[in-house]
Length: 387
Image (tube, rainbow, N blue to C red):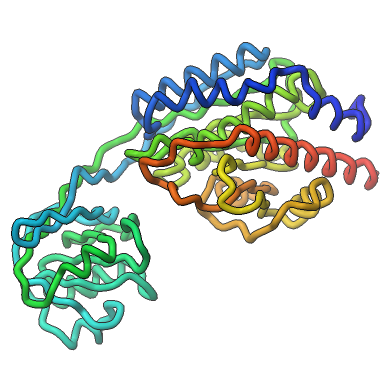
């Protein structure tokens, strides 16, 4: 099935003939496009660039389009006197402007917490934690509040979702803003939101003579508004491209798909659309490898996912860490469909979802690809040993 033995295959993949400068060139080309928000012109520029790189290597490419609704914050804030304090509307809230006294709610916003204060016609202020945003909002609405402000429990802005629509303006704010909201003080809450339809596009690269794929290497190409997304997740997208470069003249290329997902930041939209549209592909896959935030050493490179794949990765690269993979990146869509998955990740860096996400280390991206290729070899070696 594999003309090269494991050792020879790994050598061929790792030593490839491509210039060591390729990843640097890719970073320098794509990063200036700006934030690659799903549906944006910058996202389209990035897709076009990656398609050209895959094709130059001899891969065919196809686009898989999908649509979904998206909630957008158009600029929400709370005003205290002449001060304008910024916040983020929680997804699922309604828009609205309310001027009323602020009422800090003790506890975390349970019904009994709201029973200790009078929030009728007022703006309730509650801290994050223990209770979901949805339940805090429902409890505030039931208590008669005209608006709700949720104060983050850690430094930085609060981004989140109610999970479903609640007929109440709800704003998330950093701790410093929460500290400025004193009991009885009249404030003006302004929640400006819009709901529209996003047209997302996944890019799939493959060999024209490909057999049913055994491996899928994926990462999301989109970023959040305001963040150039060098680490999150141009680094993962470049890892996928680098894998395609190194594999191009080996048997691995004919048994693999290389996929750049759109809309991950809006709830794994691209990977979910791919899984739904490609049931036959899922049946042949031995593994889906997901690369997300692998260009900054916030923590040592680690893997999470299917236990057999984690074991294979650790056999190939004993220095790897391991973690329990959650549902917050594209591997989760495949795992839910029964595909074994392996998630490569270096932790959340200080510029996560921030305008400062402008740096990614090409050496760390290559190191991630090295570990992925050693994992492929370990998986194949185990398969041969079992026959």
